[in-house]
Image (cartoon, rainbow, N blue to C red):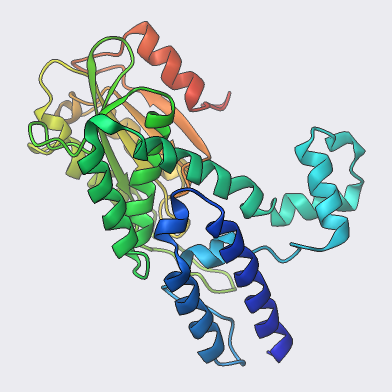
Length: 311
């Protein structure tokens, strides 16, 4: 590696920190202290390796190799304004492979959800505790887990259906109301990494990946756990995938096995997120639940969390 790569990292960090400073809630969580910590770690990294850092998880997710490159910025603006047919083959290929700039796609969505959550005056103290917990974990691997949960709660707050969080009575992460009744919400993320993140051909243990899914669902739904305690109200599990763990195919096999098991009969449905970012999602309803969803609940959840035709 050369100094130019380090300079590139510093430039990316400066742009990210500037964008963060202009947000309403994320600027409190990923604050100047966070920026200074990442800047120091960039300075200290060995130039013969690729930069990586546990503290810099969000930095690595928000950086983009083509940010500021004129042709990319023009193509991205064209795409975001609905002009996909105006892009040439190379532009479509580059955007398809590298994605859009996270500062223009992820950051606004995240901050909008956190802002909506912060405005719930009826549970202000609980929300402040949740945001403080998120901020205190910003230099640790656990940040991803906490961030996923807050993004989920923020989504429902933004859509006006979140009524409570971290309830003492039901021991669940959240309570929502879509059709004039409570629905219990539990959030979990598969943080365990079972696959290798190195170049080359690798083999994964399918049974281990499947066990990961079933174990996670069991911890939240069966054996007297949070959602298993539901009394006469629907329950929804929000499940986040880790790119180095079970994928959506393995997840669906494990989920359907749970749907068939009486131990999971309190589970009304599952929202699957393809990552902790809670952007690529879809919804699955259990057909064997003791407490089925109403038509309004099902239709709204289905419209919020897109289901592919093949599902």
